Image 1: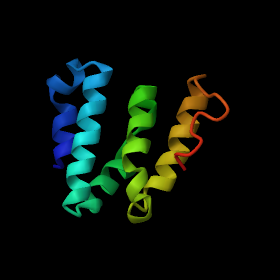
Image 2: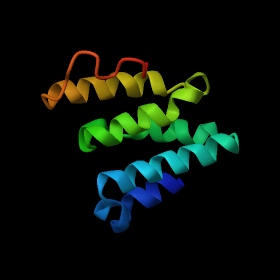
Image 3: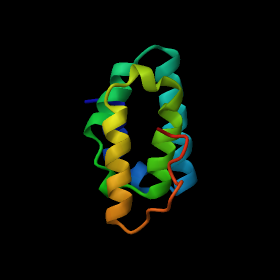
Amino acid sequence: MSEYKEYNERSEYKKMNTNQKLDWIFDWTDSLMREGRFGEIDRVLETMMPEYHEIDELLGWLTATLPAKSKLPSRKQFYSDVEGALKAKGLWEPGLLKGLE
């Protein structure tokens, strides 16, 4: 089980406020990117279900992974899934994901 999945399933993550979740997302992805562990990040993006996450978390994932997008094949689909989830939730705003492609 990946560190992300273990952490996400623990009650501590669910109790975190948005800022704490964002800190964890950025710290985790940054650490793995520095270690060259892009496959782990990619697996998270591949399996994450955007409809179950807050908008700020989704934007955090897209922002945190942007520097490594060429090494994350699942990111393009994740981006599309995020866009679809935001539209389905009625949270879509033109330009919301601009620059995060």
